[in-house]
Length: 279
Image (cartoon, rainbow, N blue to C red; front, side, top):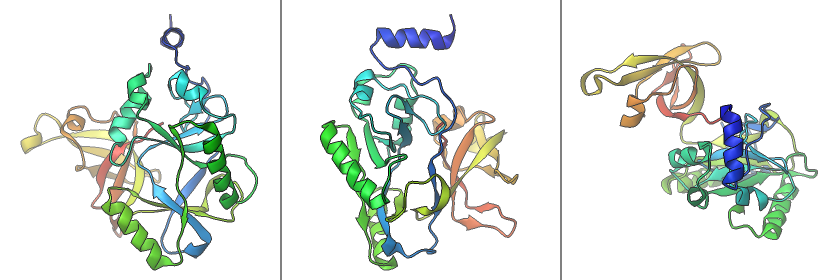
């Protein structure tokens, strides 16, 4: 019996919804970095959650890659028929714990009872983003499901106000802010319609090597050798836990790193490992 078939049969026995077999990545809206290039008064702003993006198509819950998420049946059955886009979230600073929960082939009910599905978009819906945001509130209210929640959206009058809100979120342990143009129709792809604002930059790279550690890291990984999508290679040597150094991300996996700025050669300055990218 194949591993997938065994997981499906076990899922039926344990009363959870098996993941979608589809793996084609759905078209979604992706954020550009905020660099002061827009009139922020035209945008609705929300906290950037440290969660896992999840898309609900009315039948199955999937990662942004299209791969199904092994959620308990009670979690899935309570969701509305309306397509939803949002973040599975445990709370600030709990991404690693959340990642472990949503990656399990057989979901743990007790763990999933801590997870919230925070909604910020209605894929394919008509109207402006402001109107869709109001509709999300109505959908969540009608669902009467504690783990289904709307991400709060608010307005700012100018850049100074925006930066003050960013400082408040970061001091409270948050990652940053998201800006979504209030009058925008639903769209996919990457554009200034959606912007992310953080006190640092982040990007993704592929793991192409493991460099041995020295000194206190002798016998474990010292750094990851990574390659950016445009072909630049560099090493990531900070930001890892002891467990991650003992069991580093495998070759070929994608990791997210943070950095301050770039050198004259286009390499990230003060780059630090953040996490393994979710599917």
